[in-house]
Image 1: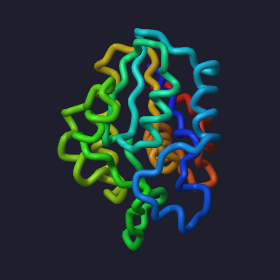
Image 2 (image 1 turned 60 degrees about the vertical axis):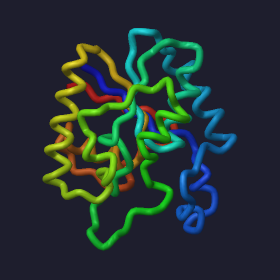
Image 3 (image 1 turned 90 degrees about the horizontal axis):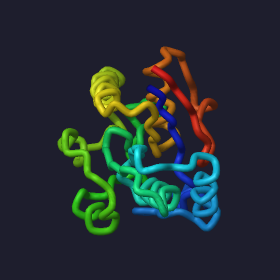
Length: 190
């Protein structure tokens, strides 16, 4: 199975850091919208494919724009929500990384299927959990991906989360310099 991790398009929260990181529920910028549209050419989707999105507006918008005009399956999972990388217990979760409640996702992005098996993570997310807890979650998430029977699954997520999964899957020691850029893909087979 191949996982294709894609970082969301440029978000409003990246325009004027560090102040803009304190925005709540930032969406895509105009550049982010264009980046999401470019994914259609880079990775054309069909009705047989699955995209798993983080439950934040910018990732949901990226997925929605990318999949426009197709009947692919779109799922939302808190197991690919923002994650600090590397972990530091002194750091706090930023407002820009707060998960949308399930009800809001259902209301505003009603063509997405909500992954219910990870219900407990909707309230706390994976941003600050220990490496050991993340390893347990990553193992469960990847097993669920395998159980879909799909040869390729697209995951729209965040730089720290993508890097955390990449480090878990490959066993490589990574750093922030390994973060993917906006809408850049990272393919991992396992």
